[in-house]
Structure formats: C-alpha cells, structure tokens
Amino acid sequence: MPLSNTGAPPASVRHNARPYLHGPETTAMVRAVEAGQYGHGPQADLFERELADYLDVDDVVAVSSATVGIHLALQACGVGPGTEVIVPSQTFAATIQPIVALGAAPRFIDHAPDTLCIEPAAVQEAITPATRAVLPVLYGGRPVDLTAIAPGLRRRNIHIIEDAAQAFGSRRTKGPATTVYSFGPIKQLTALVGGAIVPRTSEEAEALRQMRSLGITSSQADRIRTTTYTVQGPGLRGVMPDVNAAVGRVQLARFDEVATRRITLWNAYAQALHGAPGITLVDVGGDTVPFNCVVRVPGRDRIHQIMRDRGIGVGVHYPPNHLQPAFARWTRPLPVTERTAREILSLPFHPAMTPDDARWTATALLETLTKRSP
Ligand SMILES: Cc1ncc(COP(=O)(O)O)c(C=O)c1O
Image 1: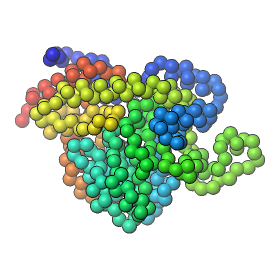
Image 2: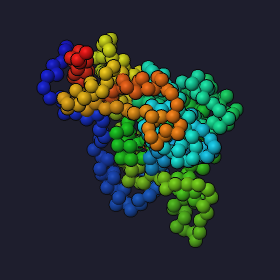
Image 3: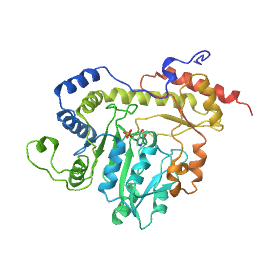
Image 4: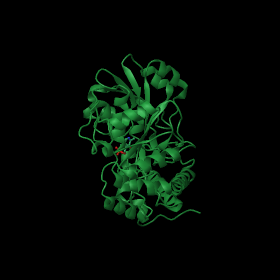
C-alpha cells in the first residue's frame, strides 16, 4: 500500500541515528556508581566474559573506545615509524588517526562500489616491504573476508586488524583477524562510549591488557596491594570504566531484539527501494546486523539538502580520508572512492524506527529524485 508522506516526517525519521536504550541501563549505571569502582572493575570483567560467550570466542579485552582499541591492536603487532597500514579511505577518521598517531603511514586503497568494502585483490596490490598490517573496515556492519589471502599475509608477518566498530552482531570471520568493536552512542550495542577487542591469541590478549593499563603489568586491583609496579612497555589509559560496562551488559542481554529490529528495518528499506531508478542500495550482505542504510544517488548534495530542509535526518558516512588535509601526505588517486563519495547518502536508521518509517522515507527519497531539477 503506498504511504502518504505529505507533511512533516514521523518524529523518529528526523534523526539519522539515535541511541536505543531498553530501560534498565539507568539502574545498572547508578548501581555501578554506588559500588564505587570507577575504573575497570567487576562489571568490566563480567562484560568481557559475557561478550566472549556471545561471540563464541576465548577472550575479549574491553577498552575505552574503538579508536583506542585500534591504536592498541596496531601497536601490539608492531605498527610504528617506518611501517605502512593498508586501509580504505571510505571510513570514519577514527580508523586513520591511530595509524598516524603511531608514526606509521596509511596506505589508502579503493573499495568495491557495491559494498564500500575493500577486497583481497586490492589489498594484495598495495603490499610493500613496509606493510605491517591491513585494517579492513566492516562498512555498515558488512563482514570483510580476507581468508583467501590470510596465509600469504601471515607469511609476510602482516597482521589483519578489523575495524568492526560498525559490526557488532555481524558474522565474524574466525581465525585470521584481530577484531575491534565500538560501543559508542549510536552503535548496535552501546556502553555510552566504549569498545572491545577480540584477540587472536592469549599472548595478544595479555599484551593488550597491559597496554590498556599504561603498560603496567599488574591489574588495578593488584596494584593497590603492593608497594611498587612495573611499566613494561607502551600503553594508554584505555580501560573501560565499570559504569560503561554495566550499561553494555544490559544491552548485551537484550541484543537479539536490537539485531532483529535493525535487520527488519534494513529489509524494509531494501524492499521499498528495490528497482527504483537512479538509486543503488549499498549492499550489507546476509551476515550483517546493519549499522546504517546507505544509498548511492547522483546529485547527492542537492538531494541531501532537500531532504534536510524537509526535516528528514539524512547524513553522509563519510567524507573520504585521503582527501582530508590531515592525511594529505599519504593521498593518492582513488577513483572508485572519489566517485562513490559524491553519491553516498545515509538514510535515517535506528532501532526505534518502524518499517513504516522506512517506507515513508523511501517514498520521500523517490519523490525528491523525481522532482529534482535537471
Ligand atoms: C568505522 C569506525 N571506526 C572507528 C570508530 C571509532 O569508534 P569509537 O567512537 O568507539 O572510538 C567509529 C565510530 O564511529 C567508526 O564508525
């Protein structure tokens, strides 16, 4: 049934993305505050264990954000001055800044236009003697499978660190990669802010735990019982506070509801936009809990403006990094990225939206496209 979309947009469509809380997060947070443990404490320990169970992995290392997680995971595998990290340009700046902060060089590569994710052949072509890591971004939550080239990368001591900031709940490629999740405000699972790393080995887990605690070998709890401590190597203040872990635990216990809502919403958009002339839906694949819903449209800037003027919460994820002043030293031509960057438009997408809201927005987009001046 065609939906009328004259007049103001439904309230939820005014936001491109929003945190989604179930209710008990507030009580959990207050309890954590009252417990008086504000750094990494019992809540963070429990959250790590529950995440490992949920993901069916041996261990998870909670951190203060995905940005810090990417920094630590890169540093743990030897990324530093004189090394290169192969990375897509089409990502949030948070993927790139840790590379630069470590004194390494981002080696930007193009992505596939239909998924906005990097592919094994492009990675292979970009390898140089300086390559120490590949940092695929699971754009919109879509898994990036590099298993075909993983043995070759391993032989050359090149590590795969997945930026899965947008991909909690999506299928994990087990084995070759270290995976970093974000639990920021609008992610599939929020801890208000926070992140987590799935390490490949127990040695890597131990190194990451030390690095998230300023390089100090003993835990916070052990430290206060002794007269000294050892700073063994590099590190940041990167633990996940218990207050955040308490919120994350509530969210994890109810994650399946959010996953279903996000998948249902994305499918409603896909159905409503199927076959629409001039619109290409960026495909998230079948193993994904979508983070967003992105279309490619010619004349994006104008459509963005018209829809924003109507109060519809469209956005752009993201202006590409190889064209940013901060990363100009490492820029190179990326024709696919540069083309798709002019076309991508993120539609309103968050779990409080209904499939009807998605259909309303799709109709508004189609109308905007047909009304567009030549
Ligand atoms: C692709 C990507 N990488 C990294 C990050 C950084 O995550 P955090 O905010 O947890 O540091 C984000 C967050 O928006 C992201 O979308």
